[in-house]
Amino acid sequence: MGDRLKKFEYFEPKSVEEAVSLLAKYKGKAKLLAGGTDLLVLMKQRLLIPQYVINIKRISDLYYINLNDGKGLKIGALTTLSSIETSTVVRKKFSILAQAASKVASYQIRNIGSIGGNICQDPRCWYYNQSHDWHRAWTPCYTLGGKVCCGDEEVKGCQRKVLLSDIAPALFALGAKIKIVRENGERIVPIKDFYKKVGNVLKSDELLTEIQIPAQPPNSIGIYSKYSPRKAIDYPMVAVAVMKKIDSGVCTDIKIISSAVTTVPFEVSEAEDLLRGNKIDFGIIEQVVQTVRDKVARQAISFGDHSADFKTEITGVLVKRALEEC
Amino acid sequence: MKQLITLKVNGETHEVAVEPQKTLLEILRYELQLTGTKEGCGGLGQCGTCTVIMDGKAVNSCLVLAMDARDKEVLTIEGVASPGKLHPIQQALLEYGAVQCGFCGPGTVLSAIALFDKNPNPTEDEIKTAIAGNLCRCTGYAKRKEALMAVAENYRERKV
Image (cartoon, rainbow over all chains, first blue to last red; front, side, top):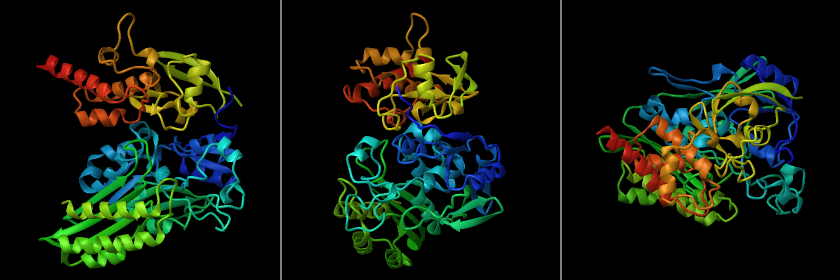
């Protein structure tokens, strides 16, 4: 039987310095392999055929979950999703992140998939993420060098690939920052600026090394909820991340993130404004849900069997439940 | 270019020459002839039939490069039973009729072993989560779950 993966030249750097110098050397031709649960699949489907693969798993410095008292949490990019899901610190103080990690794919995938890889995962669409044989029978899309988007000739450029990360919306809600290292420097990017309309801002010579999460105020509750047709081994059809701070019955701070409905997660600030300073009761929840639905309806992208209308409907339900829950 | 690596599978050490693009699954099946580990979905991490235990954790061997299994302890279905005696999890699945065509069996057994090794008295939810990554297309999940709950029950009884 033939190889599942095409041949590539293989590197195993032991340090961040070594990894970024390899990235600089093979700029644009190399792919980073972390957990591999996203990259290897894309390579098997021949959606990516990298000439060089830089396996960073042996960089032992990138596995950690550190709580700096009062200053929040730092997580090494290679930390597996299962270590995040089971970490006492994360479960206690940043519960929304543990919830999101526990909802990714399957046990087996969480055991190897990394947090860095999860947020850098390739956005997906029903047309692009298909097998090689499927693509041979169809017109290639922009990402594959063609001139259609999801089979549509009217749409110019790749417009409909949706980020289906479970971790990203939780990090939006927590106000996380991403540390990115290149050969002669580094930069820190807030998660909301990390994504472009399609894809992320990482350049081909850059390596994501750390996720930084600020300390969350007392009395704040985070809820990540995901709807997917299958309960396991599935991407979200829609997801919602809500962080709310309730002081003596009044909502003093709130974040509502809608994810998987359009290419990137977004904050519904119009709905947050309605809640801030008010008691969360039945009447206000109705208004908030309507506001969320209006905003989602304007941007939702149909994804295979999941219509934009259905996504809007379900997002409303998830927001409602998250607000009702204490 | 092939590289000579050492793989520890079911307690035995193997020296294998591998190309970096080979997955652990390919090496297990085609180099070591351990064909109990199955490939179901085409190596995409969607079905769990290729599940093995690597350093105590259940993983999809189709998504692990053989290079990354170096210096790790790998357990496949061939290493589960002792001569003439099935593992208690295999025995329970058998008794509950939880295996019809059997294709998902090896992966399911290993996911369950990874759970019970860490947590011999799991709850129903913990059992469901642990085997949620192993798709079954014929028997369904109820008998599987009941079998594993019986294993947990048995453990509780032995403890008392």
